[in-house]
Each structure stands twice: as structure tokens, then as C-alpha cells.
Length: 104
Image (cartoon, rainbow, N blue to C red; front, side, top):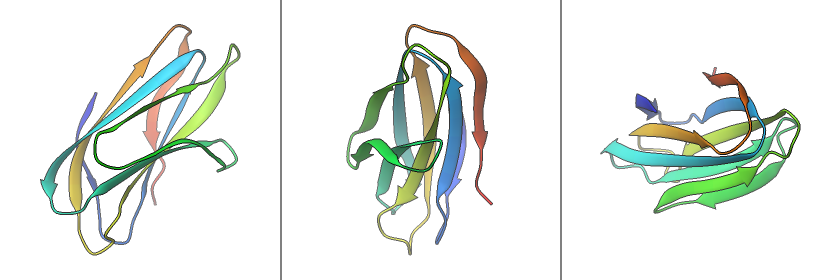
């Protein structure tokens, strides 16, 4: 779990995770009025899952081999900031690295 995160006006947050098996992602909104949008992208930036707003959770199957997934957090209204907590729940399989903020 990664607390005290914030997606700011005009920005998107990108988190990378490398592992195998199933990965569940949960975002809990905090202070701020921006509605959060959650997406999963492959290492090439192609959409592979989520596009959730409202209850912010989803899961992706990374397969049997080490695979990188990018978790993208946006606000639907780009004029508002929003704090959030990101939780990654790996299923079976091993994770080779912790999420890294790729914003900026």
C-alpha cells in the first residue's frame, strides 16, 4: 500500500509493476474534488484494462512470465487535484520490483 499520493491539475500519475500471475489494483480517493480514473497499460502504453471510475479497483493477468504493467491514475476533471492511496495485491507469481512513480 502506498499512502499520501496526489494526482495534480494537468498531470497523470504512472506507476510500473513487474511480476507474473494476477495483479489486483485498488485506489482509494482522499481529499480533493477530482473524480479519479484508473487504467492499466502494457509496457508499450497500450490499454489492457480497468478504465474505472467510481469504485476504483481492477485486476490484470500478467501471465506466467515476468511482465511489466503501467498503472495510470488521472482525474476526470483536469481542473481539480485529488489525493489517493494505491494498493497493489499480487496474486500467485513473483514480483520483481516495487511500483515506481514514472510521472515527470
